[in-house]
Figure 1: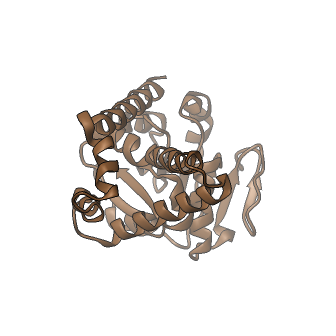
Figure 2: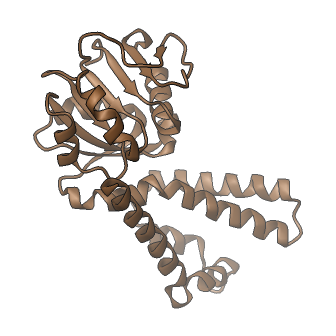
Length: 260
């Protein structure tokens, strides 16, 4: 797989983050072609505005908006062959719909990454009945945690949790920073402290086998300042309810995008 041609159809923020990481971890840029009217620049990577009139690549990744599938599929399908693996990062778009759109492809794989893949700290969910899991897992491993989802019905939930999750974490970090500024810290200092706090806590959580709730309780000693702060968040399970509502809204929108 490492020596075969790799085409990216569309190269926005997420596809670009994935490609940047692959290139940084040894993917040969000479094997990569980006097909995008914006002609994004990656050192050594060929960028073209329209689909090349060439034999099908071994791997082709769809990095466009889900709503564009109907427009691009008839053209892109002609660039797939019996040995082409199609990777789709189109949120909400079902495997069966992708297989119907690319009937000549060897395999179609649903992929849901999140933005930290750019630094190898992402989460990548995969779904593809009958796929060569070892090969696809090896390709995705430099991006971060790789999880195969057997039940496609759960894919929208995974997309909401790990795909939308970084934005929710950033918003919480922003709230921490603004809370610190409201207590008198300079906005710049509060921002630096919030970023360092969230980054350190995340690294510790990643390295620890303990449940997240246990980690929270370890910081919050009985009768201490952290405990009374947690009590505010825990009252009436308000934080859990708010986050659950945000994830359900993201899940519902993923389904809408897939049906569009």
